[in-house]
Structures are given as structure tokens and as C-alpha cells.
Length: 202
Image (cartoon, rainbow, N blue to C red; front, side, top):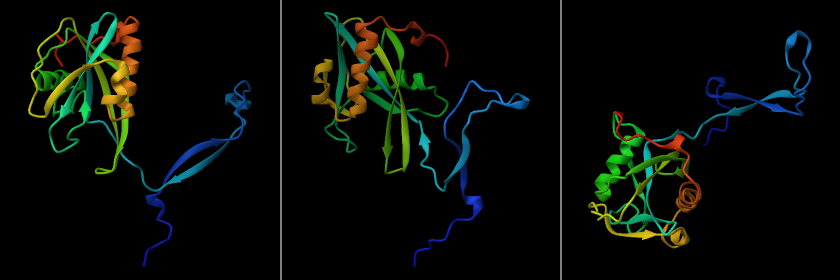
């Protein structure tokens, strides 16, 4: 018979919350800020883990002022037949951006001339490992048309525009990322604070 008893207190995580209005302009006696809010607690008995162990990269060629993005069709059993950007796992001792450059070369044979953090995360829930996955997104620019050498993981590739993202990409995270990159890195000048110097060690 299922056990519906309350778990022991040691198994409960109490998270403080604030309830009521906040008055940020009043200071109570003794120097403490009077928020006008009552502190309450929420019992959390089990957390869904949040993990970040993989990366995603969008390779872009700018043609007539518009971005063309490399997508590849998977040939492996996992997500077979779906189109995707460069992606992969971060290996032991590797930085996130170092993993991106390795995966780009392994999956396409390409090396980007300019390389940025896209300053966005793809996020989704994976039921097979019961966790929320956060994937940092990067963008690499190629200044000229280059020959693509596919790895065993893919069997076809295309250079697509933003308007084709809905047709090729299965997940909204990916379609949204391409639209965001087009706006902030192609139609506008990239924020150079996001530039990654690939010559440095790391």
C-alpha cells in the first residue's frame, strides 16, 4: 500500500518566500529596511536537477546582408532524420567554448574566423535522465564559402536563412536561437564583449 505519510523534517527543504506588499522607501528602527512583507516558507521535498554538460553552435555566412546558417541531418539512432546545428558534450577538463571549437571541426571540418558567445541558453527537460538541461549557445562566422566535411553523425547539410528555420528545425529553442542571432549579430553589430579569443589557452 502506498505510504502517504509526511516525510521526515530532514528530507524537507524549506525555501523562504515573501508575501504581501513591499515598501522599499521605509527604514525600520535599528536600520533594517521595512519591506511590509511577511516571510513564509514553501516545503520542497524533491528537486528536479539542473545540469549543463553540452553546447550548441550556429555557424553563419553573411550573404547580401542576411545570415545563412549551417544545419545538418542526423544519421544516428538518437534524433535520426532531424536537422540541427553543431552540438555535443563537454569532455573532462575542457572549457565550454573549447568543446564548441572541437565539435565544429569534428562535425564539419570548419574553423570559424570570428567566434562569439551568443549570450543565450537553450533549456529543456530530459525525461530519460530526469533533469533540466541548460545549453550555452555560441555563434561562429565564416567569411567565405567553405567546403563542409560531415562526420559519421550526419548525412546531409544545408545553409538556411532565418525564414527557413521553422521548416528545418524541430525545437522552438533552436528556431528562437537563430532568430536572435540574426537580429543581434547580423542585422546589428555584434557586442564585442561577447567575442571569444580562440588563440588563448583554455
